[in-house]
Amino acid sequence: MDYKDFENCGLKKALTMLSGKWKPMILHYLFYHGEFRFNDLWRSMPRVSKKVLADHLRQMESKGIIKRRETNGFPPEVNYALTEKGKSLGPILAALEKFGNN
Amino acid sequence: MDYKDFENCGLKKALTMLSGKWKPMILHYLFYHGEFRFNDLWRSMPRVSKKVLADHLRQMESKGIIKRRETNGFPPEVNYALTEKGKSLGPILAALEKFGNN
DNA sequence: AAACAAAGTTACCTAAAAGTAACCTTCTTG
DNA sequence: CAAGAAGGTTACTTTTAGGTAACTTTGTTT
Image 1 (cartoon, each protein chain N blue to C red):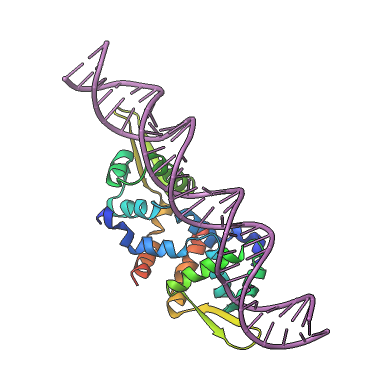
Image 2: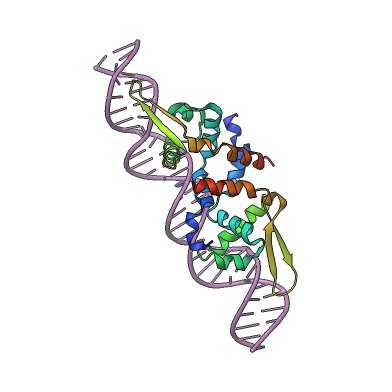
């Protein structure tokens, strides 16, 4: 590994996708509840700001981990769910959780 | 999961241990080269400051992922290596690396 | 005696991440 | 026709992470 190319390392990319104050909680919620709506998630996480939650969701969407789906009824409804790629994180996150609990 | 207890979640704890700008690179170095000395690592990572490198190493040591060993000869020599717990991250990091490369 | 080496530490400074409160748009209901 | 709800955005402030350069300590080499 040439260290000037380290930004392209898969480990670095994966950990960057998962780092963010609220991402573990979002992922936990997704694996536990399946999909959710923006405000439902937000209300269940009382200490996160809408701004940061929206940022985190956008980042995760841009990495292909979650997908956003708008229904055009009223009131507007936006659902977030894991993509297939996101679901493939399942075993890894389970292993991390186990590791973190020692 | 009660969200006010989320700080104690294993996933959160694990990801916190692994997050830090240079930790993926340190781990990569450890798994690839085995142990190293402070300045050897530092010289191979020209863009990290000694302060941050020392901080990262201290955090990882405090989590039991790496161990620090001083020899009392001269010049002083400090070696860092993975602990057994650290080695147990191997398969997880390999899976993350694969995931990160899609 | 001066210079150097290892493994840091210290006192600052800058950049990035997160938080706050107010606001916006489109429709619905009272 | 005012209020409210969903799903955000905006401008601004605070907090945390990371960076810089100089310095320290103990001993060795020149």
